[in-house]
Structure formats: C-alpha cells, structure tokens
Amino acid sequence: MKFLFSIEQWLMHQSWFIKMLLILLVVGICYGAYLVLGPKQAQQTEYQTEQAQKGSLIISITASGTVASTNARSVETDATGVVKKLFVKDGDTVKIGQAIASIELDQLGKQKAAQALSSYQSAKSSVESAKANLYSLQSKMFAANQKFINDAVARSLAPEDPSYIQQDADWLASEVLYKNQQNAINQAQNSLSSAWLSYQASSPTISSPISGKISGLSLQQGTVIDSGSSSSTGTSGTKVASIITDAAPTISIDLTEIDVSKVHIEDKATITFDTFPDKTFTGKVISVDTVGAVSSGVTTYPVTVKLDTNVEGLFSNMAATASIITQVKDDVVLIPLSSVQTTNGQSTVRVMNNGQVESKNVVLGLSSDTQTEVVSGINEGEVVVTSAVSPTAQTSGTQTRSVFSTLGGSRGGSSSGNAVRIAR
Image (cartoon, rainbow, N blue to C red; front, side, top):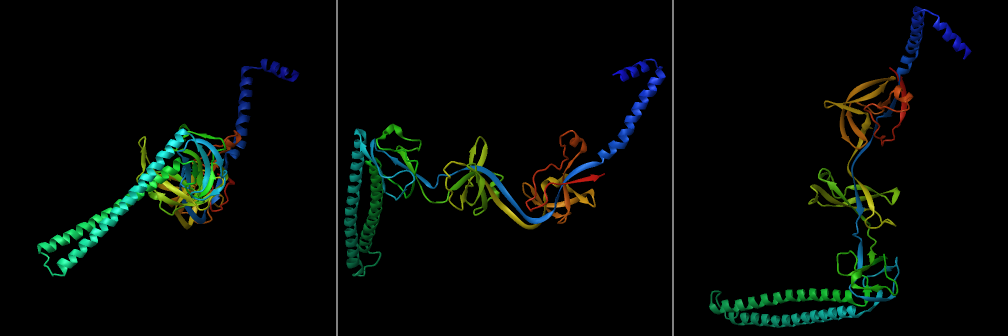
C-alpha cells in the first residue's frame, strides 16, 4: 500500500506529457500481448468428426399408440343377486362354457331369468314348427314332381301344351316354397341361439364365453350384483371379469396421410413400451386402414402391428411406440446427417484431408433420421466433420456449434465423437 501511495504521489507531480507517454506505453504492452497470444488461440478450433462407412441404411416411420384389446373378451351377466360361490380365481385358465360363479337371484333376477326362459322355449317351438312345415312342403314338392313325370313326360306332351306348362309350374313353385322354408328354419335357429344366449346371460350361473385366462375377476362370495353396477362396456350386462387368450398382442397406431402410403402389410417393426423402458420387441404390420378417420380437420389412418411373441405383464391400452421399417438399403456409403450442408440445392460435406478441412460437393441418396446415403463425392473411410467448436465458446464455458449440429451418431459402428484440433 505504501508503494502504491508513493507511485500515486509521483504521478501527481509529473507533467501532462509524461502521463500521456505512460498511458501509451501500457496500451502498447497490451496490444503486443494480444498479437503474441491472441492469434495463437484463434488458430485453435475443435472439430467433431466421424468416418464414412459402408453399411445398411434403415428407413423407418415412428408413431405412438396403445396395446389393443383384440385378444381379450369381457365376461358379463344380466343376472342380479348375491354371489353364492366362486369356481375360479384370478389367473386361472378356463374353457369355453366353464362355470365361473353362481348367483342367488333376487326378485328382479328371477323375473329376467323367467322371461329369458320363456323366450327360449318360444324360439325352440318356432324351430320345430318350421321343420314340420318343411316336411309338408317337401312332400308336396315330390308329389308335384311325380305328377309332372307321370302325366307330362310319360305322355310325351309338348312343352307348349297347357297341361305340360301347368304341371311344370306346379312342380317349380313347390320347389321354391321348399327352399324358402329351409331359409325360414335357419332364421328360427338363429333366433333360438340368440334366445339361449340371453337365457345364459340372465341365468344364476356365470359361464366363460371363450377359452383363456381369467383376468380382473371383481367378484367374491357375498358380492351384490344389481342392474346399476354395469361397467362402461357399452352393453346392458355387468362386467365381472375378462378372458385373455394366448394370442400375441397387437398395437394400434395412427399414421398421417403422408406416412400411411409408405407402409405395407408384413413390414417389420420394432416396438417399445413405457412399462418396459429397457426392452425392445419385434413385430410386423398386419392391417392398414386406408379409409382413415377425420378429427378436428386432421386425417389419421389406423395401423395394426402384431408382436412376434406374447409379453408377460402387457395389458390392454398400455402406451406403446412402434417404428415401422419401410425400406432397407444394403452396402451403401453412410455419413451422419449432421455433416451435410445444402445451399441452393447443392449438398456439401466438410472432410479432413491431411490435417486440413476442405469442402466437397456430394450427391446424396436416401436418408434416415440420423444417416444419409452418399451416391458420389465421399468414399468409404474418409473423415467427415459433423460439428465445430470455436475457442471463444470453449473459454466462456459454452459451445457455439456451426450448422453441423450434432444430430446423432452413425449406426455403422463409426468412431463417433472424435475430436481434432486444426490450425487454420
């Protein structure tokens, strides 16, 4: 402090001319230091590089969706009352028609069951009546045919003879009535099947509609089932469980009108699920709905992807992401997409040549999200620049990159992330 005070006292006693000389001397020293140190640092630029390599270019379309419920069926009942006994538990495997639970019907349940039984019995009587009419019409048809043979054919009547025409028409009319009655029997059988299913739905025994594994069984002994406990299944029945088959699950995704034309049946896909973040599954496209749906002015097209294998712990409506492989091109020269600059339709790539950076014009082919095919201009093994970091950005603690922003590495096992310092 005493030294600085002495300097200050000395400066106060100097002339204005001496003071200006001292100022110019300090400025000159600073400028000289800049000339010596500044250019040296300015000449240092760090480049991120990768090698051009031959490999397979995989082009895919990625979209989000959910696990579809196509391999599951709801177990529902129209019966009302109290659960008296359970015959299965959650996770059990059941056969079609196997009893799941029995219900002690309340008054409303008994009324529904009685009405359903009455409808079933009525439908069964209709089938028997239709069969009886069929037999009667069959007899009339054979009689008309025999009369036609005995009278018209045996007597060799001419086709234009009135007796021939009348007997032929009687036979054909009876044949039409007989065939129509066969259709009537089929309709009566369908009504009988429907009545039987309605009776089963309201019966005191809940049965499995298909074979599979019980899931989400919400019943226990003493559970009350009433008409107000219906779930959001869109039907009048109360959902009590689901039956899941062993079919491989499917994923439903929506594609835009730009992407849907690129996807075809049997295209391979990779699928990931939020519930399995560290696993990737494979599958293929099994359905493309080209009709689509419009919502808020946006058209989307549902696509169904089937997994190659079943997945334990995968449930309906879980979130999924599918990448559908639309094209694969083998044995092509690949470079990162981040190494390409395009100006006025001309694509260029910066390469390292004997320690110096130079720009080359290139002709590109197909591109994926991270890589592009080089048709000409770059050979396998050449080192391309993917990004550059200025020394100013390094010293300030930030990285200001050029237009070669890092968008991702090569899939061909290239030396991603190599750094080279070059003197310009």
